[in-house]
Image 1: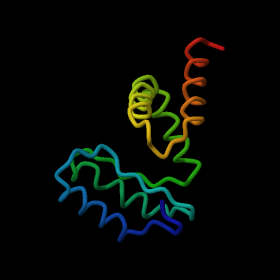
Image 2 (image 1 turned 180 degrees about the vertical axis):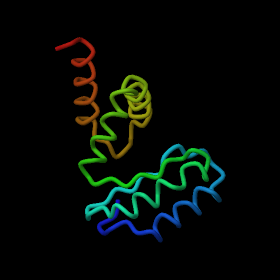
Image 3 (image 1 turned 60 degrees about the horizontal axis):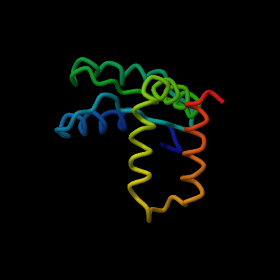
Length: 114
């Protein structure tokens, strides 16, 4: 997340990271609290084919929430299962016992349809 505008230089740096990275990236998302310059968005979109079908997106905070919620809706079951496994596997983590219990209660209520 950036507290300033995303620039062409930011896009160039992202492309360099993606090309040099050597790991599987499906999307590279900038989240900004500032305005989004349409020319920068267009510049970012031109790299899609060049970097192997990886999308570089620039979203404001609300746009990011929409994107995340859409993604989360499609993958929520596996996400929740994996999150619960990680959460319960760390008995001494920074996540308090009360928060773990609340998560499990919410998950149980959601699965039972209440």
